[in-house]
Image (cartoon, rainbow, N blue to C red):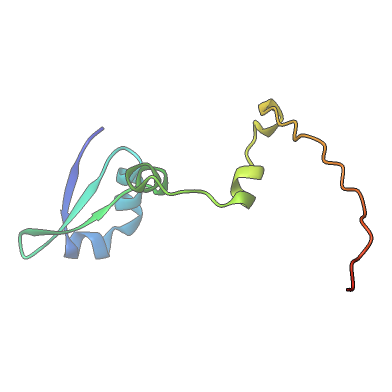
Length: 84
């Protein structure tokens, strides 16, 4: 992992290069010589924030067939209604 530091002006002039550098590590963007922002890949962001997936994302996992799930059968018997 490499850390790249660029100024705001350089970032504005070479966004594609900054995005390419972010695939190899964080890109620190400075404003008047001081770190102001960090550009990173979305995968790294997710790892850092440990975002919880929603159920739709979890069901869309590529290896979902490897998960065993056998819910117990439930027998629901009808009962007469008591209107007293």
